[in-house]
Length: 69
Image (cartoon, rainbow, N blue to C red; front, side):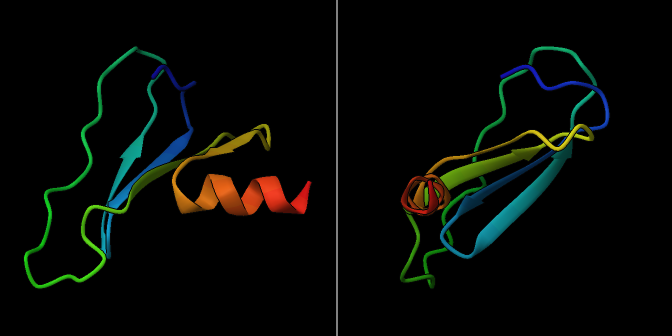
């Protein structure tokens, strides 16, 4: 995934999340490791938001966004 500078990328795996900031360079971001005590572990996704208002969601967020269209 390549994200423009200033974009925000949030990855999740169940209830565990990590936050990255885009710097315009292409990189591979891995989801956070599973928490064995989390019943929702394995439900992974990502959200990307840019300063221009563009956004992209995957996982449950992508399904939710598709419903609202």
